[in-house]
Length: 491
Figure 1 (cartoon, rainbow, N blue to C red):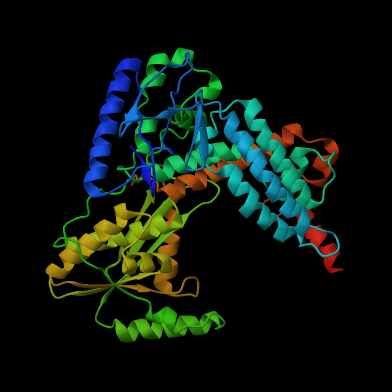
Figure 2 (cartoon, rainbow, N blue to C red):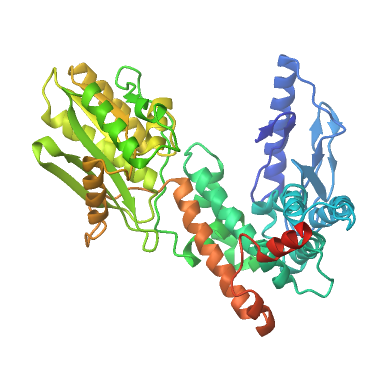
């Protein structure tokens, strides 16, 4: 039974309508008794029932506070119109009507004499029209191609207004010039993004829709291609795109007890004392002077992470110059640089815990300010790395080992930083992955974004004319057409 603000819904699924009716009536009675006990009032007039299925319509009598519940062939819940057979035709028709007013707004502000610039119009299109077409697409993506093609017409109208293009301009050309992905590719991409964000939270009930779907397992031979449930559509997308083997990070449902987790000490004093306009040589001098004065009696450990954008290979390294100790390892492909930087800090802390004695002082020097912020704020997209860092910080403090993580500037000639940077890049050349890590939702989304950009490019190459390809060889995220129009307007 999902509930959002003052809207709620309940459902039962199965093959015996009499059994389902009995179970639903029992639930309604329990809800009615609970609401009376706690002073909640349920609107009987707004309570609507729908029997979903492709069979004949049943006659069902359900009562709420001795009043019969009205049954209809469709119901609107949280902005989506669910029809009895889940064709989504009514919802798409509703989107068509709603889009008319938005298109009129775009026409008004696009007027030639006093209208907005093309780049501003595109921003307005994204915020007003595209957001409407995107909302709930994970659900209505099961509609037939015929039904969803109505939304393509709306998209084409909106982008023609934005670009000032003629009605005869092909849709694919408009999409390429505006940098807007075709809606079907965008819906598939958004479905995978939604999957990634829900997968990282084990308590999210949407995970059950992906992992288990009784109806599809039993009646899969009766499903049409366009009626496959959300969970299995996502599974098909993962398999088709070879993403089904990727493991995603999941958050712990329960936080660790406070007596085993601490707060790692961080510092960004060097950053606060520098100006972006300063010469790199001056930055290097100031940084080294601060390190020598503030950490004269500390063991210095340099950390860094690296990634090859072309191959997706990643690695980390940490270096202890005074002890001639270096460690560099290749990590899982397609991780972010941020993850490798956090991993380097964690691995250096593990070395400190295993090798240092009580009373010793250690400073970990990193050029990742985002890692410093995550540790300081105790918030990260990689809780699987941040939490062990904080736990180790607590254990080191209990062992009377002082550790501080300090930010230093990168690529200004600080010897330890330059050496550990080379080691992190050297780790990429390892034939095998030394440390397997799951991907975060953001890292998974980065993969799918690049993947669907390639799909869009392939679609453009296969459908555009020779004349269109001579003007625009690639789909654009920063449309050249808009730049030309804006330049002409300035002239």
